[in-house]
Length: 312
Image (cartoon, rainbow, N blue to C red; front, side, top):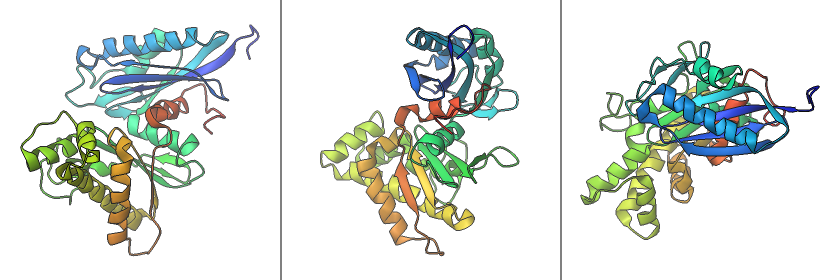
């Protein structure tokens, strides 16, 4: 509480390809939340304007609060030291090379820190979600693509080049072309796009995405079910791979595909039972406990205002 009677809060933001989510946290609880569309095709300034508007809307919904800082989980390769988006997919116009921390900080008038969105997801789940209390965890997001991040010894592990945990682009999962230019990566089987394409290859029928394939699978469509089984088997193999190399045996899975956990979870467990790690260790795979807010909550923990007791 400041001398003016206002409570300091930090904002956690998740700026994704289609939507932007905001949470305001006061150190004890989430006091406001907002969600809106991301104008990804309009460039960095438009995305910052939309995100700042959501933060201001959340502040209006939490009277008596004052914004002290913000943390952002952003899609793409991020330099956390400068808050710049280093590289991004073609779905984001003018995002690569954009100084996100400076631009959002100028818009909001507070210091801003930026982290990769999957790293923020890992932090959120490790601090207050499905991985709470676990020292070591692999976090995987199954969305348009497949992302990964590692928490080791309770801290985010980026590795020397900042790409630790990027399990989505490990080869050895068939021979399908990947969006990155490689072949046979985990992403070619387990992403939302991959699930939809697997169904299309089997049936010759076009579907908008994995959500529609899930609906078909629940209605008894065998080809749809097999598309999810293929994704689940691949995720299970990836979990065993990490358990074998790093002895990290806890995995948290989020993203849009994971919302169909009734279809995905049993297949992942079956895959691990068929091909367990040589150590015999129990590999535990759980769905995200924080859902759509996981990235934003994780981003709040890296805000320059400091770590929050709610998430610590």
